[in-house]
Amino acid sequence: MKKLCVAIALGCAAIMALAGCGAKDNRTSHSVDDLKKNYDFQWTDTSKPILNKDGAKDITFTVFSSKNASALEYGAMDIMDTLFEDTNVNVLWKQVSESVYGEQKTLTLGNHTGIDAIYHAGLSSNEITTYGVKRHNLLAIDEYLDYMPTFKSILEKREDIKKQITSTDGHIYALPRVEEMGLLQNPNLLFLNKAWTEAAIDGGVNIGITKDAVKNGLELNADQMEKLLTYFKNNDMNGNGKKNDERPLNFVWGNWQGNQCDLFGMFGINDNTEHRIIKDGQVTYTVLDDAYKDACNYINGWLENGLIEEESLDISQDTFLSKGKSNPDELYGAFYWWESKTVVTDESHYICCKPLKGPQEAYGGKYKNCQTVCVSNNPEISTGELVFFKGAPNIEVLLAYFDRYYLPEISAQINYGPIGIAFEEEKENGMLVPKDPPAGKTADELRLQNAPLGICYLTAEQWGKTVQMEERAQVRLDRLKLYATPYYDHDKIKPIPNLQFSQEELSTLSRYQTATDNYLRENVLKWIRKGVSDSDWTTHKNKAVTAAVGIKEVTAVYQAAYNRYLGK
Image 1 (tube, rainbow, N blue to C red):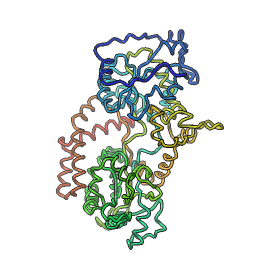
Image 2: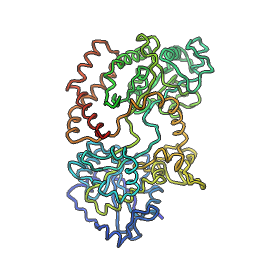
Image 3: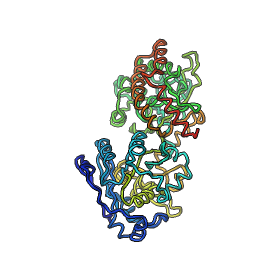
Image 4: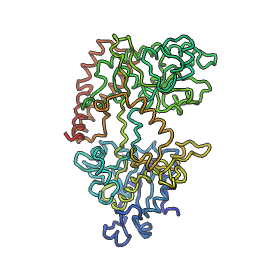
């Protein structure tokens, strides 16, 4: 049966009318005892409904959320029907497009009359502190964990998750999304055109390997790669009669994936788009390492020689993918990306390489054994995904409802789509196995139309036990295990986890971090485009630690928050 509620996509004016003008919330609020007596409210047995049929009719919750333009309304999704039938909890989804969500979120946080929660909230640490710790608009979820047996159990097992979502006042104001597949920390893989490389070897390029070695796992140093890229640039590799359309080495500058950061690995630097990592337990900016200057100058040489086109510094992700997929002639000699199949028409034409080793002769050979990768600060635990408003009626019921989302079999369907559409259920062990999308529809399209995404709990122990990983995800994971994750010291180098900041620390970040980010964005790009002299580098190192740039102040805040995270 279809649930009673429907999803309503609201325009800006409608949301403002709902949340503003001093409207009163006249919904009936019941005590837990009354909920038990009148509606059979229970939360301990997750295989049974939370409310009875009368509860489904009498109690309704309103949840505000953003929605991808390609996604169906959440209330029209089969998984929501299943959840309603299993719980008898009636949720009315009020949705707006992602393009206006930011503005509407701020309005709703300020005046939430008639709205119980925000899904896909995407709240920053600053917003959680402002609306939770400071203004007390948000519900302290930790005071209601007894109504969330699944989530409470997760926090008891996973202290690291608890630390990342607990604010500095000791309360939890937002629920997380946890999808641990091991895919995010190293966002780049290096793909090389196999046929072009073999042609270069036949053409006399001496890189010390035979054509038989041109296969997945090929290891090249910077000198060998430079020879190949030079050959790609100077020859009609795709055979279309043009010698100027080949793009030797490609990436999308500053993108969350497929970015430039692995190039710095040739110089022993675990860079990322924030230029900030944990090194030997200390918050560290990579741009203060003298090797960074050498890396910029070396990469600048490739740029000036046309081995990296200037366009790579400005190209958008969509344009990059379009150039790879839509052109009848292959254009890319090598590229960094998440996976090859999304970039090129025939992924069999490309091999996946190990990280590049450093230049063997330049800089006196000091970098010849350097070989490492980007370590991003993109966590697999996303905080701020779902918040509840303080004073919302019957909040215990809504918390028990969203607690079901953390059950592995529900998490999989929330994240990918329901059984029968996105998954088949194996009869022997009950594991959910992904189904192939129907003809004419991609896996991403199928997912958007059938899965609301948002909060879930899918950890390494669930993959292969409760849920079978998608084939493309498994391929990427296998490649990472071979060509990325072994290439840095996991004890020495770590990404920065989700950190919680005090109001004073947020004030400091507000004062300095924009200046820091702008300074680094402008200067790193300038160094790549023009190179950096010794005198310029000295000026940079002296200026970077001044209050005008703010690196010192920002580092101190992150270090204090990280020390708290470690329990120091």
